[in-house]
Image (cartoon, rainbow, N blue to C red):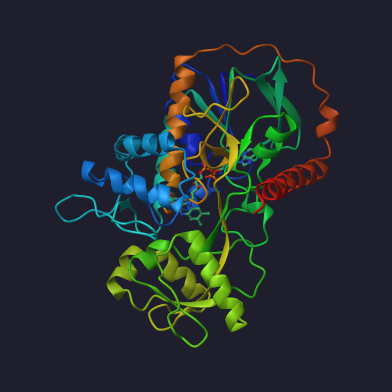
Length: 428
Ligand SMILES: Cc1cc2nc3c(=O)[nH]c(=O)nc-3n(C[C@H](O)[C@H](O)[C@H](O)COP(=O)(O)OP(=O)(O)OC[C@H]3O[C@@H](n4cnc5c(N)ncnc54)[C@H](O)[C@@H]3O)c2cc1C
């Protein structure tokens, strides 16, 4: 197979990148499972935007403070400054955000935000954005998407990425040559027992980067979300109770139904407080009370959460729900510059797989969809401004990729070991 640009992953970052590449280029997107199986479809709360100039300093400060001031300031500035442009693109693709009667946007708030600056579509913002991006991609004749097709490795020649080894839907192993490769493989939640992420998101791109000596950054910065619905059943995926529920007034209680914290603390701080409370209570969860939110607001803003809780036998209008912290987001990843370029020539990384330092040590709520889109577009622009042709592939021994189970195990171990190693190096 050959293509001009190979994009690995069909979440919001991969799709948005594809939409900004030249229409005369042949673009191939591969994705490990089905088209809707990306974390981008799961995003509930919303997407941040710079409402107007008066909010710039506060937005910047909130992002930095949540990130423990370890953020890359230039990345933060680029993200905030590009936000209105990205939202205008999304609206042009037909994405609908909640609006007031006069047509102006409604902004909501989440933990650690000093102001309301989050656009949302009920509690399914990610689905609204990603499905519209997908629709747009499917209209483009130069873009082909292959589902159930997995990146197994990249192919390196003279220090540049010149192609990839992929497993196709029928379990065949093939090579693909390309001028550029973009890793948009999402997070690493699939490596954890309790995570809000899809199980197949296991940090494959990060493992491949390790094998090829591609630089990584902040590998031990992993965000635990304070509130996911507690379940005794070994669920596939932890169901998120969005932070915007707390932004709209939901409260947290200990086993005696007493409030024990400020619900709008940054995620990492609140997760620690909840864990300590669970230890003190000798309990596997704490309680979250959504009855503090007016019923019409619950129905219009959070129908998906209300419905999911109902399916799990909780009526949130009548009773509290048990919640517990779970792995949620990966702030670290493959190190990239401000144009999403990795340390390897012709190789880009975008979205949750990449680390441009925007989130520092801890991500501010609703900054990740925005960051994914802003830096996906910058990757596309960088490739557009530096056109390259695909080069012939070196000879590759494909037999080493035949045992998928063994390869998956090897990749899992590489990523987890790297996280441990970074923790030890940083003494955390
Ligand atoms: C429950 C939940 C709620 C969230 N809510 C919000 C929110 O309200 N606001 C916000 O800003 N962020 C939110 N986030 C985070 C945000 O959704 C993600 O960070 C963002 O969508 C990541 O986009 P992405 O394109 O990087 O990856 P993803 O959307 O996860 O896509 C990754 C893609 O890579 C593919 N892939 C992975 N490995 C391979 C491989 N080896 N070969 C081929 N394909 C591969 C996958 O199949 C998938 O298509 C939430 C996340 C979760 C889980």
